[in-house]
Length: 464
Ligand code: BG6
Image (cartoon, rainbow, N blue to C red; front, side, top):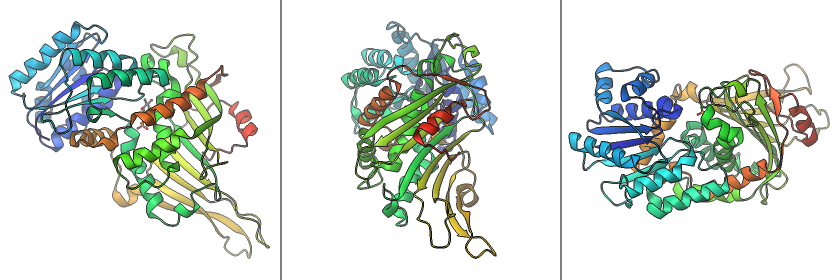
């Protein structure tokens, strides 16, 4: 890292305060970057000091001197994203910063930490006012644009945003990101599948009974009502994080585990996903959360039954389940193998299950059968564990640092290609088609009790 100008649209939001600005601070610290300037913009009438006071709570430990230096290079400017004239004064703020700090040769990162319904306006106006210009990967200095997920709120809006972006910028400047792709255990999925011969021959509908992807969250929506009420659980995490996990689990062997080879295979799988059924819930008290419509029918819990229409996966159900305000925080994938036939002497074997735990613990476990001690033909399930933190130490939550580092290096693999996004929205649009019941559930529970009917209808037995 050398010299940087970072522009954050949505600098007062939850993402900027909790993840993005702390990650920038840590990166600047890690690479001892001296010359940089961060300019935040948002609707709020606030100040850089006010924003950073909140950010500081997420940066531990803090080297006070370094923090003060960081503070001295962080600026805030009010902007109405939909108001073209505001971008002229915003540009002035950026130019002032460049002039004061002699940053004219600096590379520029522009981060869209806003809801996606602002993406088109911001993209258009930063191009028109030349806050950002079309460059190519070989240009120096470069400008890179980073769009947070979800990219749009359905297929149509995703297309509109993408058309606006490609009108003004080159594809190699664009990063549509999904922070799940930088999680340590997510990176491990393809590696473990394709480097261990014990798994790949069994990775198909002959041996796999079903796949479950579960993203449970203990927290409610907190102060994110304004954003969340427009999207709901299905678009907030299923359209991106969970479908990317599904794609990594189900893709064919890529030529290499890098860049477009992996993106090609992920896209092929997503293109073949079929929707069978879905189920929705809303936690009690959701409509009392700040900025949430009192009559909101936004779902905070979704379960989906999907299939993949290709020779490898024909007939294998993929079950996805996510929710806010549940009993625990956990992101897990279970791959349940088929049961073996009864042996002459015993029938009590359970199916093997490979579990990949992404958060909060990181690791894999494989459920096998073993002989019950002392009993001649009794079988007992045992678990073989790979605990990531036991071997490699506690995982730091560094997803955003890894992401920004990747973007600075120009690594496109941290970015989701538009065709993947397009296929994912087609799936979500189909899931949301028509009218669905919305079942209430209490906070801290496992979700709506009525999911039992959905489970019964499809013969689903969730593994957690
Ligand atoms: C974000 C969603 O993308 O992912 C949040 O907007 C969700 O609603 C979060 O809480 C989950 O990510 P993680 O890394 O905490 O599992």
